[in-house]
Length: 454
Image (cartoon, rainbow, N blue to C red; front, side, top):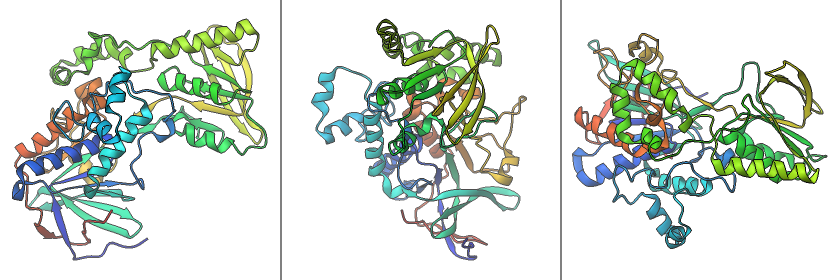
């Protein structure tokens, strides 16, 4: 691997973004609109690094008929700037589908369409991002005991480069979660890989005869419906610990938990109130399924029972206790939570729709992490403006777009709040007065800093 070369100049960025998913695309748009508005030396010098070769957001789950669970009005910009040229409506206009969408009378676009909107928006700010660039380390640039800059080491096909920033915003997204002891393989999948892995089955010597899907949330139900439709000769078994899928509470009053002002209210609430709010409203977002999809699956199951052609099976109040892959398939054991009875069930593929976990925001920070403060429960302390609380000697800002449920509530890291969240981060950056001219250069000892080409 190429070594970092010493003694070369580096642009001092006002902001470096780590990751370029929807959250940091929205951040780039907010910076772009700010720069267009103010111009000159008041503009923010920002750069984003994304390890993927191009923009992508849960590509493995872009099932052709799956829809968004949030209104199109909660796009990357509208709640922050309704007049933005980066809105979903502007996207529709550019694609010649605005009138058709209006006639559709639906607030919830297809997921594949919203992904195309994200790509469209990302392309409009692609001068600010370097794809195929992975941030591998962050170190403090200390002067007189004070840290005013962070040095970010970035790896690409050209080797390593060092970039210096006054602020960073971490938007590295979520990580697929698998149960303890279960590894992802060619036959044991996480649902994030669904479409990619399914395509690999097309060349198999024999068509699949049984799938097992583990989980009780929206993704699990979508996986069950998709596999049942895609493989008409296969049995699809859903395994979950409940009696059935639970519907999402998307009523108008409950949806207030996703209002922008709910973030501030949650942040200011005492810890016991925060816990109660999470318990009260977890059914707006976690392990719940759209009622229309629940009805469709139940209708299909009942129809197959009537016709005597049961391919859709629901093993409820149960759990998968053993998963062993063999050259011929996957051996599993399903245990009833009521009786303890165990049933052996062989399958061609087991899909774990077991959700995601936020990445550790301190995972990349190295020695900088020691300067980040934690609460009594050992969790990262995050201020209202999404800046990690640090010791006074660290004066640069470390902002996070994710992993803030314990401080900011359910809404804080979801797409519902993205436009408002990046606006608040931008306001914080500007309010702290840490802007510079784009041409300011510092010599970085021990590294090369070049604004890498995309």
